[in-house]
Amino acid sequence: MKVKLQTKSGLFDFDVRADETVLAAGLRQGITLPYECATGTCGTCRGRVMEGDARMAWPDAPGAARLKTERGDCLLCQTYVSSDAVVRVPSDTVHRNGDARPLPDHGRGELTGIRRLTDDVMHFGLVLEHPVRFDAGQFVTMRVPGIAGARAYSMVNYDGETDRMDFVVKRKPGGKFCDWLFEDAAPGAEIGFFGPLGAATFHPEEQRDILCIAGGSGIAGIMSILDHATEIDHFAGHRGDVFFGVRTLADCFYLDELSDFAARSGENLRITVALSHEDAGRDRHPDFPLIRLDTGFVHDAAARAMEGRYGNPLGYVAGPPPMVDAAIRLLISQGKVPTSDIRYDKFG
Image (cartoon, rainbow, N blue to C red):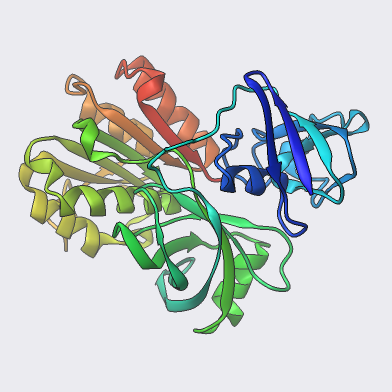
């Protein structure tokens, strides 16, 4: 099938496979369609089907709450067409001709490296059929046979072009993918993915200090950024400040890796873990002296530590929506960081 896309910046035509959404088809072919989560939660990828046969796979998606479906409104990440169609999107759109950044595509991988980091946090990897390229800070959406819908997870690792991607997931009550991963998943299980996606990315050529604020499993993309930055010795000439929020000391994870990043980067990389549900009781982790501790919500810890020393950083924020919103307000109001210099992922 073919989709004719009507946008503020012109008309675009692209092919759509029967088994892919309009969003995936457009992104795969270099059309810069609007999106954030790509899973139905945020509502950013709204459009309107003007002509043709289309259905939304998840009509009750949280992001669809304000749509006028009787007029053809839809979420592109949930919309499948069964005929040629005309779709209107209220945004400026371009075609990424000659863009060096990796285009998203469909792929498959085998589950590997499953290990619990805490009672409700799991690390796992995918060994890929074909190598992929992605920017540090990006994510993919995953599908597992027998479980409806897609889930978005950021890569923890970074290695340019790689045949493996690593992830971390925090278990959510009633989460079917989480239940499968924690209870039934076995090495070798096949997982389909689409990506890479996301614009909360690190680009060394920008030559900037970085300030990262993450809550819970939101640390995933930050880990990828630190992996890349540390590997190229970015912190030899630039400052990095990382604030990682968890509930208690027992809920901390990736401390070995974070401590290693700090050790390899000297005093220019400062990593602080903020405990929201217990008193830290000391200013350094008892087993990882390079990791600072603070008490309270992670954005409050960042506010205390960064007062008077923001400079001109790029801000990276990832985690639950309330935490992300609070951190963005902090960066804008206290840090005077322009919105164009703030890159974020909300985990709904």
